[in-house]
Amino acid sequence: MLSHAVKIDSNKANDVVAEAKSILVDANELCQQKFQNADVLGNAIEEALRLLRKEWYEEVTPEEVAAIKAAMVSGSRGIATPSVTGGIA
Image (cartoon, rainbow, N blue to C red; front, side, top):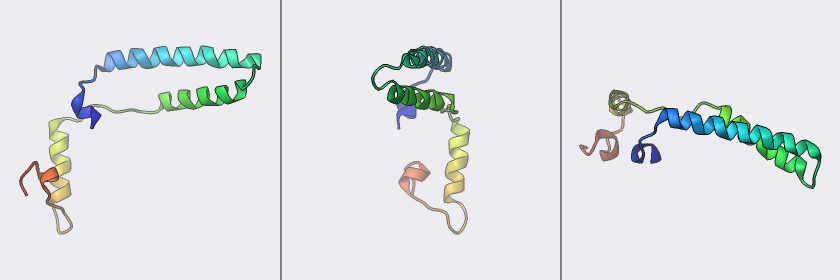
């Protein structure tokens, strides 16, 4: 999973998202000029803006991961696999 491979700088990510939103808003305004396929491009821009407004990944602490793993293996319906138990089956 990418989230484990890359350390995310949330301030930098917020800056990049803000810049992307600004560029997309400007592009959407250009679509009002009604050039060929402007409506299709405008729809794609609206979808991109919608996706940028959604909540996104925040780093999960080791304690949270441990709690999730413990919940997955506990109880009568729990599972015990090396991937869940950290290599101990």
